[in-house]
Length: 455
Image (tube, rainbow, N blue to C red; front, side, top):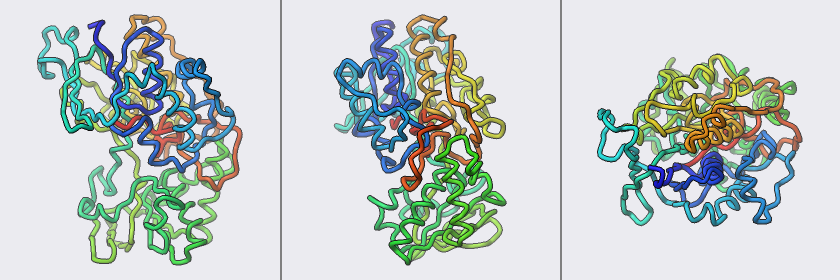
């Protein structure tokens, strides 16, 4: 078992941090990334600026690995864009020979199991190697035998549906052609899809706020652009957050500006609008609420949050919180009904452990459906996990995490505490809920910090 590599699923911020910590421990990682490059999920929202400054987005072991190459740290008080997180940190990290030689891109993990054992078998289970089945970009599916598995694949690929009750709205799949990505580049790459059109943004999180503000900027140049906003709640107060009193200044500005846009009529708010169905017509999509109200739109932006993809783990013995689908000991600590990102204690391998020995879910995916993840939290998770896999249980159990004082670090928003700040906001040099993966854009939306890996 010791001679086999450790599989890391996802080459986002937390996945690459896991690799750096494993290497420091003298362990051999192999990284499977579904996208074409490291940080592929973040690349889809590279136009978004994070709320948290650089000092909370860098993992210590990764920095130690980078420094001998001549890499220079960015200004630690600056707020990076998603693209800068890739270009100035993740790409240089992934390019290091120590990592590039172990990184397989275009490698989508489709299953994790034990060699020769399904989940019902007990005998010798803990000492039997894992098998990770991977679809590679050359079209072949291959099995990889590994000693342990760290799943840092994130949640970006699995958004929550538009409908209520956790289900897709009737007709949602048929309407896919009129539903955009969760964080479209309204002012840039995706401009033509929104300019002069009737746009419905669905969701009560910071991802929705970002999109609405960008659409308002677009409407200044494209007068025919109409902006509708649907939230399930009775009001949008939670999205507005702490306003100018928010502990993350950039996030406070976000809520204050959105409130002004609604009050001015630039954004047409429809509260209490739980979606029951979407009807695709020749020229638009008709969206119907549970109470019978309807809204017509040319394009719908789903800012409804994310959930973990657990299908690949069907043959792994998991112990998940029944509400948020996080590891059972972590679930009560992060339940958004009771906690914000500033109140979640640091945690490591013991809290993240499952009945399946040497298997861990880390990063945004470890938070399941909870939207309050921070990148810095993910970095401490993988430091502890690497120590545990190396047999240093004392170091694994000594968890610590230093974050700035949090002001209003709301969990309401269906997005991570690292959620991005729109480019239109003034640069801010301080922050509270630092950007750890999506938490951070948990998001990634989300992710106030980057949302996570992308496998």
